[in-house]
Length: 462
Ligand code: GLU
Image (cartoon, rainbow, N blue to C red; front, side, top):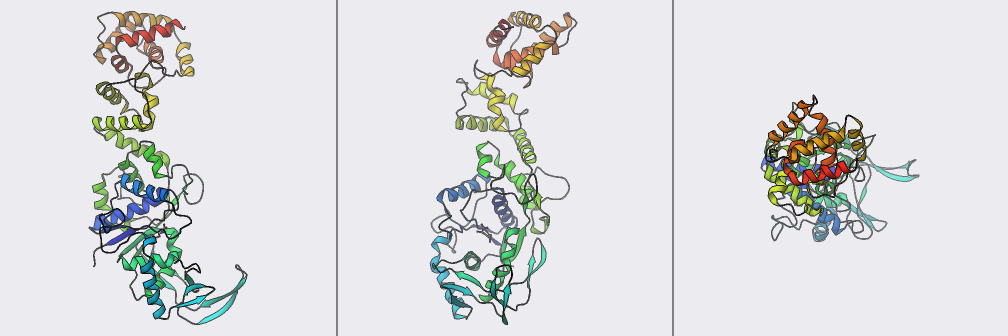
């Protein structure tokens, strides 16, 4: 067997979405699993629909997800291999050369200014009801495709098709096959929406006298709600969006891997080395996968929880800086201490600014509904007064969670009350929220002065 050469061949005609990322990922995983070569080929022959912005997003998203390519644009001077250039817009001379081969073999003809590919077989004309016109049909044997995921697929290709348009530009089917031949691609791993093109492609391979690569068509990703294929317009479809929202790329990759593949059993969170080791084409599901944004968020949370605190803090800092979230000049130690409280509690980096707002200054919002609820029971004013008095005492040790907890507990016990009678109202007074990290940790981090000022300010409004 020759070494595996696979390619990801995006067209820069739209934003990079989950479906593209999965196709890229399955190619990348297969290359890494087999020790083969992963090639990035840009299919940019559609001059009207291509854009540099879409191209940039492809490069950035692949880089962010950690899918490095061995050959392709931006790899060394010649694209890292002997098969460049890797953008179809720069390969016109190669397409001409291959067209000449087909012409010499008698497999083309001109009609309506375009160049057509000629199938072999007996011809006859029929009236096509659907297209409302006469079409020429060619009697051909069914094409058998031994798909590495779908198994045996049979398709009939019985009409000649255009390979060069009248404007002189080659058609997708032609350039796609020519490049797979010229780049010595061994496995074509792509979305199932291309299965209907594959018989055309096989016919072209045969006309060039080249054995077709192994095809592996990946089932669709279905919309989260409702029927049909997920589109780039669906919520959660765009990879850049995850990057912007502070998702961890490792989590996104892990989640996408599971859209159509699993290692057996119920293992889900797996290091990439493990996925590379276990990944194989026959294990890709034949049935469609359904997108699930809650599952994605959950996977991200598992990865966030597992991060070493210093890394979590660094990601949070970067996110705050990118979003220009003010932290009142918090120094590194304080910022890190706040993040240590938040890390086990949040589901995503994007929750951090709201979750930690009261740590950065006095101008934090209050959840009015939660406030009304906290004030509705017991005697909140009396509890706060007692708390203020106790916390003002030099005996209150603000360096220790346990000491603060013991202090509030003894306050409660002395009056036949519970910790909760102080906690709810103190929390709303000091943070503006009804939930968050442990109250005593918050008191410790804010420090005596700020806590007392907040409690007093709050009591004054009652
Ligand atoms: N440019 C095609 C696409 O973006 C690639 C098809 C293929 O992988 O063969 O869908």
